[in-house]
Length: 594
Image 1 (cartoon, helix red, strand yellow):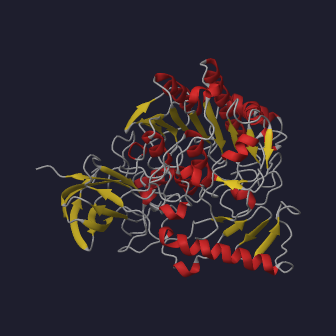
Image 2: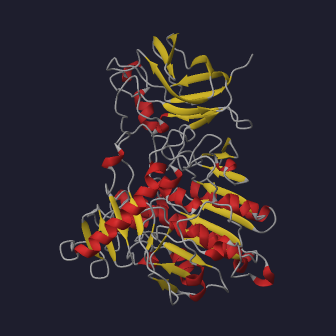
Image 3: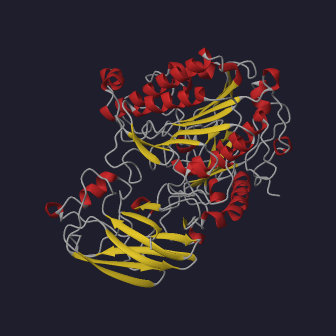
């Protein structure tokens, strides 16, 4: 077996090593923020940003100084939910349908639910929007979500902002009053209080990801300190989430739940703003930011707290990562994961209980591969591309740059020529991992049609794959509502061009389906009617045509679809300044009526 990763036999046996008082299993509050890197917290040395509640949480437990994530959102979340490197689950990007967690891969939430826990998610999922990839299909009983990867992306409620947002509660959109981070924290606490223990609450905050929207009172201290407006808002969003986390933890304490709850706090990738040479920016001396294979793209804040079980105020430098969270919680909570695929992570329980690395803890290598390669890149071009592989001491970047992180944590001095033995060893480790993971990475999950109980499927251009008939590269910004708004704002905006693309789907129940194409989603406050043209629908090599009259808000096709995988590529003429056909930015597919 490749020794790159480890599985712990105690995890696989499902034995609880750290029983809570009276033998009850602990509750779990798992908090993940979005784009908050290692240096974006006071307890990791940020000299300007104030995070008193995070600092107190770190002081109450064990924090890791060398904890790795993927450098982007969806891949990190796939690793967190499965304990396996994201490539093994088909997740390699945040768009293009490459962010969908492979069907049938079991998740942490499923393990908790099987063990009798209540399970709820509040915030950002970003591992597949339509069913059967929705959190309600992946082990969560309750789901309150922002759509897509951030507010204002195409799967989100049209026109959403962080203020007075619509959130998707168990599949249906619902309006809320207030600021989104506050709402998510409030709703999480209300859900915790609603019913019995034990519970697993995944609070996946979308802050401080763009759009940088926060109340003036939160940004003002940082503006007054002379920070640029973008950084002031970024820090203001973190200060706000810190305050909401403090309220949530205070609620647990007042309810007598604090000592019965494991609290885990994590970022999802390196900082989005901390690495540019702007006044006030702080990246803890790390090189690179979100999307980078250097340590600044992958190092995240990581805190584990369980009063009465984990020692207080311990900082641990042991190399660890998101792949370790699931096996760790499985050990602490007695989850039976014997039927799960072998995890790439190892349980951190011995470190957490001791507050330090125990004797005999072996070093290992952890890979980081930024998988935002262009669609259809040949697999032989991918090894080492925008990658790193870490041991406790060394990091090999892009297969050729070697850094001694003990002597050079900022990765400034390449010592590859001085240590060819280490370069050769880490290249072999990387290739051993890559050869075991590449097949999963190159096989994105198709969207599923016709599975009983899942209902109609709604797709957006955020998940387009490149078109096969109209061969154009996917346009930049296709995941943002503001981009689609610019493309579809009527004749006066006709000089703004759009784009084309399609979706790979797997039909599980053959039959006749209604396929509805739109420029903006149904119910949008400002619909975008079509101009005169013709709609052409390519379905698995077959062509269907329909005239599109001026002013139509939707085009519908009834299509007989056999079982199996087909590529759907809608093309509508007469809509783009270039004269090229336009794709369907929104598509709803469901069984056709009689």
